[in-house]
Image (tube, rainbow, N blue to C red; front, side):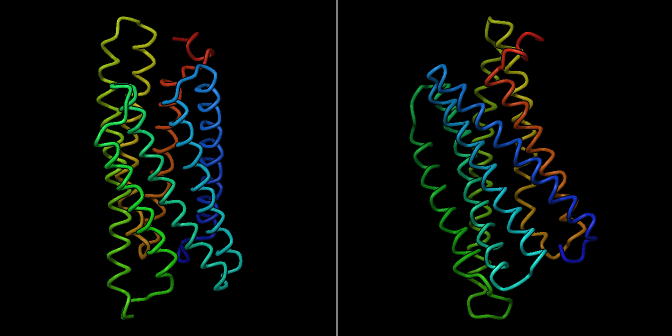
Length: 249
């Protein structure tokens, strides 16, 4: 982002903090709602919202530290924060899949267990990329490993996201055939939210590969944050259905 105007850079930081604060709030509200009604799947999804909010917040803090004082220490912190962000985003996408599975069958299936394994693998690749191989540059002996681990981390995160999102969409479509009109209206919001999540996941996939194209990265970052935030809000309204929202349906 060094070639981007400082105004645009700080705009991204502020937008990021707003997005992360809202994600954390959604996570807490979803967790509380799940505990209040004793719904395990809602608690799992709430934890997912909370974790991605915290992970992305650490990422933004890392960027701010590196921009303010670009020392070797802060640059390493920024890189480690990237690993944390990728890891917790993958866990969030996993919780979407787990919610959909528990909503449809009330149990964790083979694909869910496989996806848990993929999530662990993705976390390992993320920390190898942005921590263990930190500082490796083009031409260095470990550069090929860096490209491989980064690609695997991004692919693992994206694949988990797509499986989670499309599993949720399948579940939500079934809910749209329910007799209860209020429930149907709520799940229309959740359905639209998860369609936006697919858009966000696609942008997440391309984002890490734009590091050498700051203008394109700025645009994709704004679109990614907007899509994730809109998707989260719509999904929260549809799944949790806060009383003030339900009264307006």
